[in-house]
Amino acid sequence: MSCINKVILVLALILLGSAISLSQTKSVENIESEIANLKNPQPFSVHYNNRKDITTIKLSISLRGESKILRKRFKELFLETSTIYSGIGIDDKPFRNLICIKTRAKKFYFSNDRNLSIGLDEDALNLPNGNRSTKVRGRKIRETICWDINRKLIEDLSQSGKMNLGIGSLSISLSDTQLKLLRDYAKLLRVKKG
Image 1 (cartoon, rainbow, N blue to C red):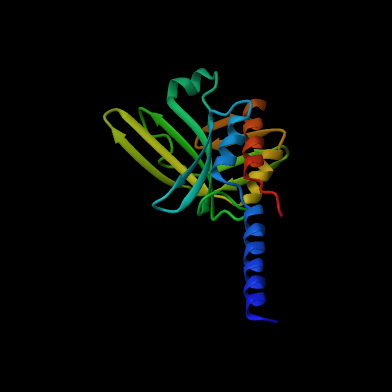
Image 2 (image 1 turned 60 degrees about the horizontal axis):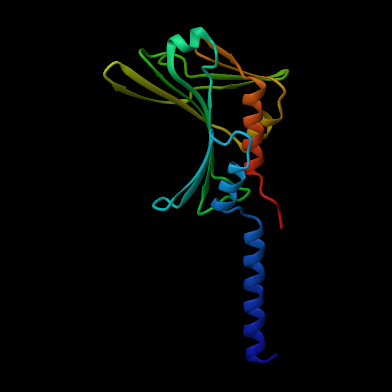
C-alpha cells in the first residue's frame, strides 16, 4: 500500500469516527429548536458556558400553583432539574444530573430538614441530606436544596402517572401539566444513536 493510500485511509477513518461521534450528539442549536417547538417552552433552557466548557439543560417548574397556603408562605417555589454535559452540545453521558427545590420566602423553611421524598405512582424514593445554600437580602430569604441523581431517575420521573414531593413539612402533588413538562425534559435529553 502506497504512502498516499495510507494517508487517505487514515483520513477516511478519522472522518468516519467524527461522523459517528457527531451523530451521537445534539447541538445547542438543535436543542433550542426542540425547545421552541414544545407546547410550553418557557420553563426550559439550554446554555453553553464557554469558560467552563459545559452545556446545561434546565427545567424549572413552579410548584406554588393555586394553593393559598403555598402562595402565602413562598414568593417563589420551584422544582428544578438540570443536566450538565462536558463540551458543546449533549451526548448520552451527562456528567451531572441535579434535582433542586428553590424558594424565596420571608423565613427559613428547610434549615432542619433537607430530605426529599418522591412518590412515583406506587413507589417511593427518599433522597437524604440535599446540599443547601441560602442567601439573605433584607427580609428576603432564598433557599436552594439540590440532590445529585442518576439519569435513570429522570426517565422514571418522566414515565410516572402520579408524582408527589415531600420536603420538610410540605407535601406537593404535581399536576398533569407539570408531569408533561418532565416528559418533555426527558425527551430533550435523548440522543439518537448513530
